[in-house]
Image (cartoon, rainbow, N blue to C red; front, side, top):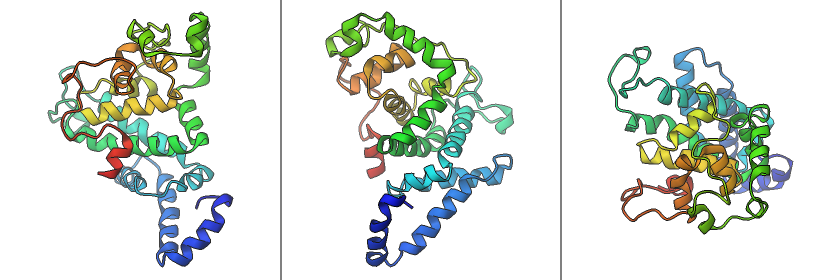
Length: 268
């Protein structure tokens, strides 16, 4: 399932692992499930469960997901999951009647259960595979909507700022000169990027950390791009975790025992 460059490894795995053929069949089945339609609630719940299983798949399984157009379907699930958490809340933080009409505080454990697996999966494969990262970025930051404004913002920065960024320059008010508190393109509430950026200040700590980490890798781990695309107000927590800004001790939302990265969460 890892592509041509993994064929010899697959032969070794078949020899060393008596369950290799079964695991291969499960990998094929997972990809098939990801292509099931979303209209039926029961079917969609199976797709969501399959995303959770992807957290434990080998990293070279990403090649198989790419070859079978599964990154697009995973991003479809992301959009539906994020929408159910972000947009299906009224201003008081209750869940809408379309989801049963029961009261629920924004940022609860149910929100984390809905979003944590898919955020971890996207971070895992996006970090390891440049083509997966490219597809993710094009979906969340569509070129026709984002690139022109982003390039203009880069061009307007001081020349020294666009090439290198120091922690002191961010501390003084922006990533190498970027001072926007909100995303430069002011995305519509209907867009996926608006919803993911919204999660960067969510009250549930793991959602906040993982959504910020997803946006961080989509911005090529570049503080200037990160601030321009998400806004300094949304970016400040991740910038603090990365050492670009100072966050007062005891003021981070992590708390005791909360994983700080997707990798740490996978190891728990």
